[in-house]
Image (cartoon, rainbow, N blue to C red; front, side, top):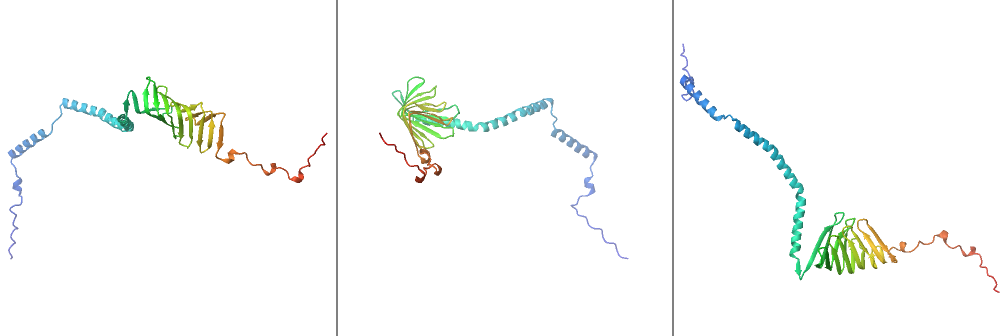
Length: 269
């Protein structure tokens, strides 16, 4: 009879059942430690903390949307703010180039808007403030916009600018330029910058793509796109088809010589 194999040897480092055996005192002590740790980790809020948290939540409900609206408003208003900043910068630049000598202002610039919110600008070599409303100008130049957003420039040797009425009276060597190529010269011209009207009751000479025009007065409405010239005047069109009447058609031409009856003569007495 053969001998039975020896039992397998155990690893001395492997855990054994007796290692997990705890006494009642150890269990009670461990439970007490766990209870104290749980009590310290969990802090129940008191009524003051709850009220403080409610106030913070209520405050956040109003402040956060208000901050979002303020941010959106600043984004929407930024273009206008940028235009104002640029306008102030341009004004400061013009003030740097401005010189005042003996009560006169050199390199003066005046800006404004007409009834249709189109900008206009008046520059002058020299400006003299006569009254709070009247300004005498030397070498004035006015730049405006027409109905089709085309530019119009008018200049002269002398001028008077009425600030409150937005009127500009030009005298001596008045020259008007338009974007469509029309050039008008005259002695005087009155300009209503607010309504966009230029008028004169003196002789005017105009040249442009249409031809040549001489008239005894004119009125131009930039907003209406209308130009009226007062006669007597002279108009020469560049297009010959408009300058001359149409040629006679064959049906209206003279009949052939064979069909013309002979002329009748009467004896003289």
